[in-house]
Image (tube, rainbow, N blue to C red):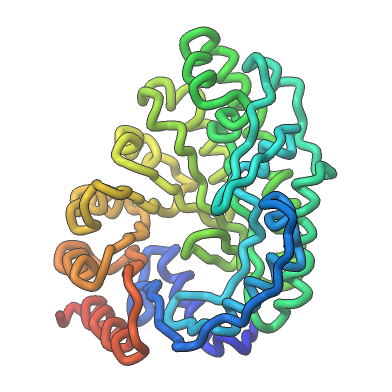
Length: 359
């Protein structure tokens, strides 16, 4: 694959594939933002409402194109467009309506009883799903040879049930009809391949690697498997309901990384590390929960289990704390902040020395 916006794309993908396998070619993958000094060109917009703006396929792709044209893509920062109308497009495929805010959207719960889910099937002809399809197709057309089109943000398994029922109602379902929750989790898990495959199919056919909203990318099918709802339930409840759905998803994919969101979800880490098909963990500690360097014990637990880890360091000093305490194998280092090209190259050289054991 060749990209005019990133001539070293294959070298970087080789580095990432080594990371997936727990190895290193020259250094671990690094995501770092380099200031280009160029402002994206302005895309004219005259939308009557937020909904119209969100659903304007041409505007969405042109805006992404303008940002990519003005960007600099160093190390494992890839030029890409993520088709996006918010995180609950899967719920929309089951009939939920979506409400749109300035920067995000959310679904309107549409299921009265948890067992109603058992009669539901995803409708890939639903209007919102069709919007994502059109965004994907237009991006593949315009981005050919210039950027990577990714799979949209998909909230599946327990998060899908929470979107259909409302998180509070789903929490009550665990008390009122635990078996119904278990059956519903199993039911929607079987649809993951349909939903993911529908969007990834055209991307794979175009010869592109697989990526989505985060840093992750892979040759072959890959995804951030996730469930933010799990912070609301016990490990026993998780093991009987949502964990089997996550196992289903990781078995379907060639590569998978779990997006573990917030301290309330840490109680499920050991169960996730026990999944044989899960390759890595992205630990998102969240605002107000310190820095990456404060969570060395979590990263070590992941490494000791033989899994990779995506580390979200707040800044260069935080990244150095990680390098001081973790082995480089299996680490994808995301360095927060914004840097000049010279600063970025110096950071990459430091990461190479870490990989070589010479820091």
